[in-house]
Each structure stands twice: as structure tokens, then as C-alpha cells.
Image (cartoon, rainbow over all chains, first blue to last red):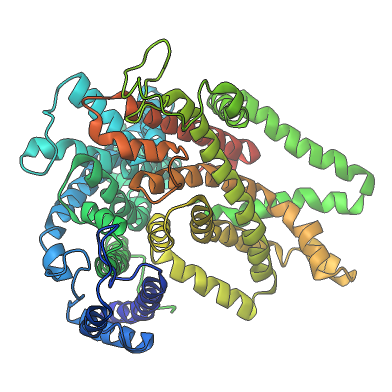
Length: 313
Length: 310
């Protein structure tokens, strides 16, 4: 087990290295230079000032050397200074934003897993009944509607139309949390519901469930004692992509609901081409996703003891 | 998610195809029946028919955008700025006095054109690479799969965002970003199909008979790999429409004044309370488009092979 985890962590290194190298080269090859002023029509800095700034930021060195220096600093969480806010370091800017995004993401994930799982189980137990259609519909809406579209429609209905939720935006009181969480959760919720449903149906049709029924166990007892335990394992495999979906979706949701999180700032830095920030956020996303995939794989083994780690590879 | 069932599916279709290879006269009849059955199943599915109608309407709107729209998409009517829907402007006007209906109609053209053209290029890139990797295996396969692995480390949309933020907005860059980030799925699917078909008896027979690898791939293997490829394409197009809308929403998609639904939502979502029509109509258009394609895609998948349904 420990050997497996260490092995996986070691495999992560080349992927992250390639990712960071590609990012770094892309960022350096782009036309816009951080030495140019931020304002659109401002006068350029004098050549001497540009040379000084280039030396200060290490931009006068060969690109490979720049990359190695960057990596060395990045390991110590030093991602340099923002090009947009020239007096603040990237870490200072991003550090207070991460907890907000994490809060939103975790709530959405919990909502998606609990409600999506329950919906899938209920749908499988009422196959082709009304609840099954509700589940299918919710899954289709959740999977196919982009979350920024969902956000606009939800705001129109619940904030402007029914006035159930105050028109605020931000992340100050619990009423601000409701719509962003629901919006972010709906897509993953749909996928989980769909997946749980089909996995449940597979198990319900299996021989040992028929045996349990033949023994005379009640329908509810069969579901609770025999079906759930095995049917909930396959949906675990999609947790990796689900976490990726929440991560990718959160910038859009944060943007519309004015949630002061990492995602919203990420968009701002993209429009401003603030490369040190973009680079740091992408590295964060990459490492985070790889770690989450590892956690999901480990979880899979904990829940299903039939899976052994590190045996074959 | 459908990956585990693919070898099975390949095998099932392969069996159908073995016979026509032997009896030449029967070959056309067999294939026609397979596809005719699929069409019949598709048309029996009400949701799929609804999706088909939705996609059809969208295609017509996109093709005849210049005939249908009452105004030019970039014509600014300075007397009618930010007006609510009325008889003259059924969907209202935007902040600089452009007719929303006309912009929505041209937006359909942008969405569809970008998605369909990008999908065609992706097919032209992904299928040959996947076929070569799956058929020959070895180092070609190894290289392709390592590249795919690296791409999978970052979600598609984030990668597209990165590319657009580096290249800057504009429709050519948008094509590039979408193609670079979306060729993986079809490559992987084609490769998996080729891998499972490679050792089938009819492929071996063709090889023994002296057929060239190109002929075997194109004539014998690809037709049997067609079902998952068709399904991937039907789900790929809405994914591309979504990606275009998402990038334009952020402001790094198409170049203004070219209209895009995603960009209209992104630009106007902050005025939702005062001018709801600016963001709600484009949102509804994206929603209707995505749902139509999903219904149609689900229908096509079920019609081509009921067992492929997860």
C-alpha cells in the first residue's frame, strides 16, 4: 500500500514537469511582454528601465535557465511577483482565495454525491416509474447545460422572479452560498445519478440478489443489505472526473455569483495576461487533480477489498 | 464510461460483417439493414426526434442567418439603446443599440460553424492517428498514448483557456485551441477499436490474402469501428459548442463584434437585474442547443446499439 502510494507520487513528477515546462515555454513565447505598461495607450518605459526590470525578474537570462530558476523557487511556493499588481507576490494574492473556492467546491461535491447518489438509487428502485423519469431528466439537464447558463437561468427564476433569495452576490452569508453551490453541483449530480442508477440495476439483476429474494427477504432489506454495498462501488470510479468538473466549473460559477475565490481571480489574470498568476494557478490545478485522482484510487481500494494495489504493475 | 463495452461491441459488429466478405452480392443488403434498423429505432424515440428537430431548426437558422435576421448583427441603432423586447425588436436591443434577435441568429451561425468545422478537422486528425496506433502498436502506440496521458493531466477546457490566453482571442485561434484540446477522445476510441479488431479472423484472413495494411484498415476495420466513432462525434459537437460558448463567456473566444451566445451571456450577466433580456435569451439558446444535441446523441447511441447504453 505505502509502496503503491509512493510509486504513484513518483509517477506524478514527470507529468507535472512536462506540464510546467510546456506552460513556461508558452508563457515566454507570447507577444505581450510584462515590461510593457499595463494601460493600453500608455508610453513605454525607457529602455534602461526595461533592462532593469528584466534583470530584476530574470528575463534577460536564457529561457532554460529561467525555467530551472522558476522550478527551484516554485518548490518553495515562491511563484514570483504578479505582473498586474507589481508589488504583491503571487502567493500573497492567491492564498486568501483558495479557502473560499475550497469551501464552495466541497459543498458542491457533497451535494452532488448525496443527492445524486440518492436520486440514482431511488430511480433504480422505481424503474420506468415517475421518479425514474425525474432522475433521467435531472441527469440530462445537469450533464448538458453549461453551468454559466444554469446560473443565469437560476438567478432569473429564484432571485429576480420568485424573489426567494436576496439579490446580493459575494460570499458573506449562507444565503449567498445556496445558488453557487447548486449551480456547481448540478452537472456532477446528474452524472452521479445516472451512473448510480445503472450500477444499481446491474446489481439488482444479479444472481445473488435473486437468491436473497428467493429466501424471502423483504424488498427493502435486499436493497439495504445486499444491493447498496456492491452497487455504490462503481460510481466511485467517476469521482476523479467529477472533481475535475467541479474544479473547471468553479471559475464560471464564481464569476457570475461574484464569489471572491480562486476561479474568479483566475479569469481576471487571464484577461490581464498576468502570467505568473496564470502559471501558478495551472500548476496548482494540475497537482491538485493528480493528488485527488490518487485519493480516489485509494478510496476505491478501501471500499472494495477485492482490489489490490501494486500487484501487477 | 462506455469503454469497457467497446470490445464486446466491436466483436458483435464484426460477426455481422464476416459473412458479407464471403458472399459479395449480399454485402450491400446487410449494411443497409444495419443502418436502416438504426434509423427506425431512432425515429421511434420521441426525445431523439425532438432533438433532431431542434438541431435541424438550428442548422437552418445558421445557414439562412443573413435572410432571417431583420438587421445586421453589428448595426448600431443609437436611438434604441438597451431597450426591452418590443414589436420592432422582438428580443430587445443591447447596450450599444444592436438588435438582439439578429445577433442571436448570427450567433447560431458562429456556434454551428465553429463546432462542425472543428469536429471535421478532429476526425481527420484523430481517426488516422488512432488507427495507426491501434493497428501497429509498438512505439507509435506508446508515443501517442504518452501524449494523450499528458493532455489528460489537465481538463480540456482549462487547456483551451490556457491556449486562448496565450494566443489571444479570434476565431482562428479558437479553432486551433478547440482542435488541440479535443482530438484525444476520438483518437483513443479509434485506437481501442483497432486494438480489439486487429486479431479478428477476418482481419487475419485479409492479411494472409495479401491485402495492404492501408486497405485492411480502411476497407475492413474502420467500417466495423464506425458505431463508436459516430457516437463520439454526436457527443463531440455539443462539447465543442459548449467550449466555444465558455471561452467567449470569459472574453477570450471570438472577436467582437462577431456575435457569440457565450460572449453575450458573459458580457451581460452583470446587468441581469436591470436588463434581463440581454443574458437570458442567449442562455436559453445555449440551453436549447445543448439539450437538442444531447437528446439526439443519446438517441443515436441507443439506436446504433442498445447495449452501448450504460
